[in-house]
Length: 468
Image (cartoon, rainbow, N blue to C red):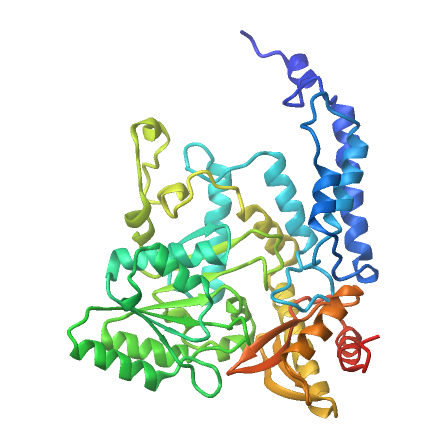
């Protein structure tokens, strides 16, 4: 059958003739307007909004739609549902880890989704695969990692850490893994998923600055070696979730090299801070990691989801994850590059690198670096306000955009009540956590749209007697 251009045009919608090209275009423009209106007006909207789950399920659910309905009405209903959430991109969202995505990155997600782009193999998707190769090499270069570093993009920090740990175990394991009490919870979970027994996982107390304690590590390693146990891996952190603390990476790299241990660095939160001069100095040793992960949907201003894995030893990911069944023989890479479907547990993979490529290409690395520096300044401003206030005790200083503090005389229940009240009226969102048994409030400031007044007004609201 010859190609029929008119037929192709008439069936532009997969479910043709559900929507004509003109209707698709109009609805697409409306979605753009809805998103831009959200972005332009977010500072004046609540940082968090909530509704009972039962009410939302009742409104969105019911019998399975059989005959379809008006597209505009469906969009209206979905936009209403999307408003009920904690808005990670709001300039006064300081809870957990914000996600302030750039518009260029949003465009990238739209393009990749609209073209249904996958980055699976060089034979089936050479364009998206090339985009991923370029983006990962840009990040490798910016972070000072050696040429030839193995890399892949995955769904986020949890999958990135799991992927790196699996690769590390294939090369250097099994054996004892050493973590700190500030290591993110996805790492011990990842070790458990990989079948590492609990008796091979050491969670060591951190030092007085909540960083990996080298003395405790040396003692534990010596004891395990004396007991005849096989040693494997140290998991360090470049920017802990609780306080933004940066483990002593250079010293840990020296220790691991001397002891024959694999050094894994979880930079999912703070790693991109190394793009700044300040961060590069604080994270000296980052480029010496045997494996490193990043989460671009945090500091690199990407929409969820996006995670990156870097392995210093070339070919490790392919050795760990390659599967080449007969039904994929005609789309298996014949070059030395290797297919991205063979670099992680994922087979069908979104073209996640498109949004990062557009972000770097449209804004440039210098503007991204400046945006990160702005966030570091915001955290230092918050620290200064806390130090000069009669209401607060500064608990940990500004580190990687995070500062923790406590209301004088308050307990955990009081902190939680004030944080909940702040979120309930929508003006801002903050997190509570516990540090060495002490309840604290926590600000995470990684949105360059946040202003000093946003910080000041949030601290005033938290300290107000009635939180009104």
